Length: 278
Image (cartoon, rainbow, N blue to C red; front, side, top):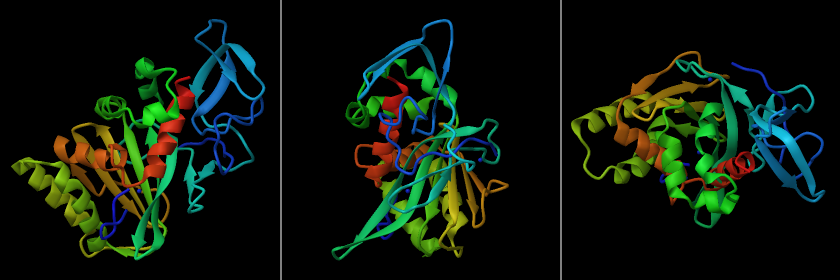
């Protein structure tokens, strides 16, 4: 996630997940990844093997839904203990989105690592049906596959990044960190880009961002990004609309490019994709 100084990460129901997802364990009980559920169908769309049981599942179809454990509808990011809903709706987004992975941003001061925020990536489940070319790839292969993440971003299906602060940060500091990460990725800013960055900046200037504040960065389309900030639960409206393909893609690259500010988030998302694309 973005750096602080440099900071290094809408209603819907699902079921809670174990605190440390591992897509290979806990079968044949509940699957631990938040996007996966199973149900039998008569036509074979996918068969796979799970270890350590080495059980072959036939006539099994992946669906994107949360597994049920208990009564809560959350999964926990293990390093920060921040709980993310396994699915949610954001303002001005027509579809319920499902959690694909979580991670955190840590800033090192001197030799001490300080966690600044946790983050979770939500996607329109339909987007995953368009990634068939990457079926069978391992998490490590997916993590290093920039064409996959480029295709993922450029697909006109909704994606949303929820950032949850785990310490108090003033708005200016947060924006300066965002700008420091975004600007170098826009080699020749156009007037549209400059206007978008100015709008983006205005959301945070003079605004305290206390611990627990959520910032939603939502891409309903690659050329548009919606920004919503809430200090108490899910936001009810969009604070600003950023209409610049360059700014939107640069921000996505901050988190999912070849030098992500939150390696743990990209690793988690890659693991989720690998699990679903088996």
